[in-house]
Amino acid sequence: MTYTLESAQNIFTDTQVPSPIPATIALFEQLNVDDKLALLWYAYTEMGRTITPAAVGAARLQLAEGLLNQVKQMSATDQTQFMRDLASRANTPLSRSYGFFSVNTKLAFWYELGELMKQGVVAPIPAEYQMTPGVKAVLAAIQQLDPGEQITVLRNAVVDMGYEDAVAPSPTETADEPMFPRTEPAPTKLKVEGITDSTVLSYFAALNADDFEAALALFTPDGALQPPFQKPIVGPDAIAKYMRSEAQGLNLMPQQGISETLPDGSKQLKITGVVQTPWFGVNVGMNIGWRFLLNPQGKIFFVAIDMLASPQELLNLRPR
Ligand code: EQ3
Image (cartoon, rainbow, N blue to C red; front, side, top):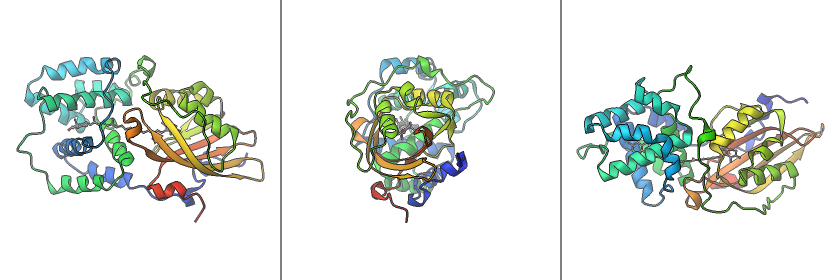
């Protein structure tokens, strides 16, 4: 094969529109710790007027229960300090405990903390807190985003918190995590305009059934999957671990695509559509693009999953 991971990463880049998400995250990163926490509170509660995440099941909270109980028993001052430590990634025992959590446990933990803040059990954002110009600017930037992009920024903020020790054991084994119950059954009969490739259609069907074994069988042994704004994850073991942790309960609704066969029989395809996360169900549709490179035997050598910059990009399939 004549392609490399680097060349695969560049397929269809001329059809891409830069996403506003990295710039919004960079603005957020410039805020001081208290402003970060306050910004997240305002963004989350404001968003919550139209979209609220699905309540976290008791099973998922069990993994975070120990830390939640410790926080509940603290004084209000210590609770505030604990949240500051998380947001500043301080190296404290509790911030390290949080750092061990998987992505979904981190989200569940903050979801519950948010509920406890509303109830007054955990220290809320102080009533006298005044939004700084920086917070106002980041909030305005977030308001410009569509709901799928807003939840991506929030998720990123939560995932980045806490102290992660490079030499410590890996985060909470995801094998212990409960499956996400599907609120909506995943689409079964997929019709993707312009796409008949059986590998790609099987990929969507496998993920919609949480059948990660079947999805992995579609990849080459050196195959790679590149999640939005991340580096490629290479090899079946790493992809399997990632999918078990992050791809559960997703509803993939690819809508249209283009497919080009290269002289050596390999194929590149770009497909766009909508993805729903079990956290928000049908309430939030994320505009997503998949860029596949299949080898001449029809196996996936590379797939990039991109957050599209706008619904218009859904239809932007031709090189400019
Ligand atoms: C309490 C409060 C509000 C204030 C406090 O001061 C600070 C914090 C942090 C607070 C709490 C915030 C909370 C509770 C935030 C919760 C945010 C949530 C639940 C966000 C969830 C987002 C989920 C997303 C963006 C999921 C995206 C998934 C995608 C794009 C999946 C794509 C995939 C596809 C399509 C594939 O084909 C392969 C796999 C892959 C996973 C890559």
